[in-house]
Length: 389
Image (tube, rainbow, N blue to C red; front, side, top):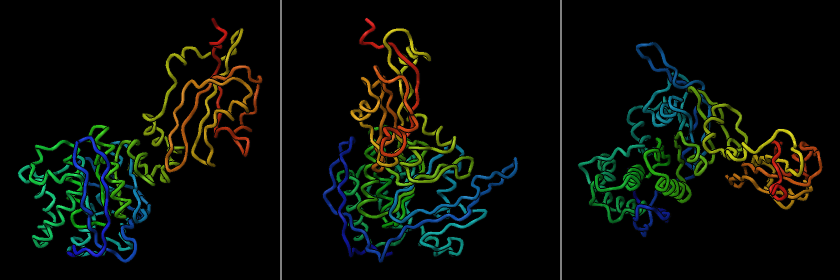
């Protein structure tokens, strides 16, 4: 295996809560003639045989993953995520269809070629899979020793990787002395040891606290951007997909439920499974507002409550000044939940509007140049607090 360096790319690791030092050494990566790391699944199916009969884990999976992209696979427990991921490095053999890496059908590879393929595909795990009796250095060096890399090259490579993940001072530490985030950084370094073109992440942040999850996602994003490695990750958390992925596949009972750019899937989910996975990220109406809402306009001064939704398309942004001018009344923000994903705005505003005309053509205000939102819904009425006392 060639580990000689012909091109150098430096990667600055993000700030991290585990109080590890910033990397100061550039990580060397082999130069390659053109983009590598393209993955395609063509009609892939996987059936397991159990005592209760055949179980279809995957059915008719068709997708392409561009080289150098970050691709997310999400689904509920039992959706088939791990089975799909393991077909990419041939740890699972599809029952039907084919898996291609850089346009090569993996079914055509012999055992020697599969070993070579797996050296091009790194993998990190939810529970780290570190050897407790080995130091951090030895855990990272393990795949290089198995591959027969000379000792001097192993030492150089391991120290470069320790610098990359910000663990220069942990080379001689044992896993039991590390935090969860530090253990996952060791797992990432080990996965990168052979200079892979593809990195598979199997629930890589599920065992981590939210703050550490953010630092690991930032590290993966920087690795992707600086080194051009294709990253394919599976998760059950839509927040992870939102933070890092370019495109996402939603799996439901082994089938493709939804597939597309992250901003599109988040902005306007088409499948019930996607909406269910997104539900924890949605902003429900505050309880006090739900209790105050009335279906009919009350006597006296009151406000109309509107929900404005933004789906990420057309470059439409929440512009309160313009919204107030179009609605023709005094506007209060009761609730706001707006995200920016891949340069697109999506989310919702809940507004209370007083002294506005009795009726509006809401559909017209969601179309063309006069649009103030992608969807407008009347939720009801509340008493005007300015004149209620």
